[in-house]
Length: 291
Image (cartoon, rainbow, N blue to C red; front, side, top):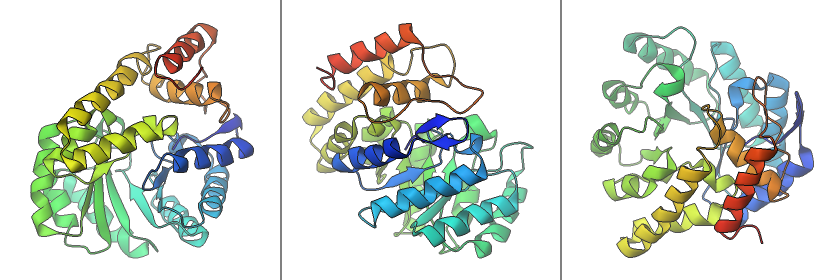
């Protein structure tokens, strides 16, 4: 889920309420807040705490809420996890600390120290493009020995890695394996994964829910049809702009044009300007979300 902002350190409160209801109305199975699309590491701790509390209060247990606790400071990850538990979240999600790259033995020891401090179950979050460190498969296998680590979200974009992660599921039948890039959602389900955490579901949740269900059902004709729509969004919306922030800008711009929430970005990023905004509006019209 994106984080609706109206200023540098201010949530768009009404927009957050509309966004949560918009996403839930699309039939999703859960919400993941403060992740990459949620600009989590760019937000103040005060604002993160407010977002956690307001989101959990509004969801009221209708679906699980997962909260990213990724941080460069061990104690701050623990603090965010405690806020999440107090607010009623269901699990926390952790990518490797992202400033000074750690080796795998150091990452394993970090998990050994962190997990006993956490009041909620933990998902690992593999995002090497942004953290510079991969949860290597042997580290994942070792993490499976801890019953309080319950799954992995893989945003590496590496399907070979994902297939090998599927192969580890025999060690933990209760383990949950999710994929990040929405372009890989159907392939991930066909490979034996359990679903996806997809940014496009912020503005078009029903599309990704239907694609997931079609893949689960083995309906390949429907999967091809829906996957083509996902790729149309990926090829057109996510390539507006020249920088990696364009994906989040595009999602926030779409939500603004749909009158769901403000598209203010956490600094150093800036919302799309009018030329890009017009292209997003055209795409939303093409896919039937704007009349």
